[in-house]
Length: 110
Length: 115
Image (cartoon, rainbow over all chains, first blue to last red):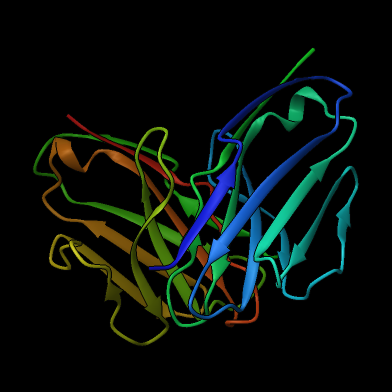
C-alpha cells in the first residue's frame, strides 16, 4: 500500500527560526512529490518535485527531493507568524489518486 | 496563474436539501478535476475524479447517487450533494489540473453545514 509519512506532526517555533519539515514515501510508481500549505481554507500549491537533488526555491521556502532515499524536505528560513499552517506532502503516482501525508502543523509565535 | 475558484464558500441548509457546489478553473483548461472531503484535523479524502466529458470515477465507499458530479466543460465541474443530511456536513474541496505532469491546484473549499 502506498504511503506518505510526514514528520514532525506538529512544531512550535519562534519568529526568525529556521524549520525543516520531512516527508518520506513508499509508493509503487512515482511521478512527482508535491508540497502544499493549508491555512484555514484549502491547500495552496508550493512545490512540485520530480528530480533528485534539484532544489526548488520560492522566497524563504525551499525544497529538495531524494529519490534514492525516498524522502523530501521543506525548509523555511526566517519564519514569520504568517507561515503558521499545516504543510502537506503528497505523492503523485500517475493514474492513482494523490497520496497525502497527515501533514505537519507549524505554529510560529512572535 | 493556475487559479481555481470554488463557489459557494459556505452553505447552511436544512436536512433533505440538495446542494450544488461549483468548481471553475479560471486561467487554464482542466482536463481532470478532483473532489475531496476533509473532516476537522484530518487530511484530505478523495471522493471522486472526473475527466471532462466522462463519467466520474468514485472512490470506494463514496455513493455516486448521493454525490453527483458533472464535468461538462474544461473549466467547470459541479458536485451536487443530494438530499443532504447532517452527517454530510464537512469541508468539500475541489482541485484541477491540466494534465498528469502538472500539479493539482485547489479551490478555496466549501464549508457545508446541514441542520
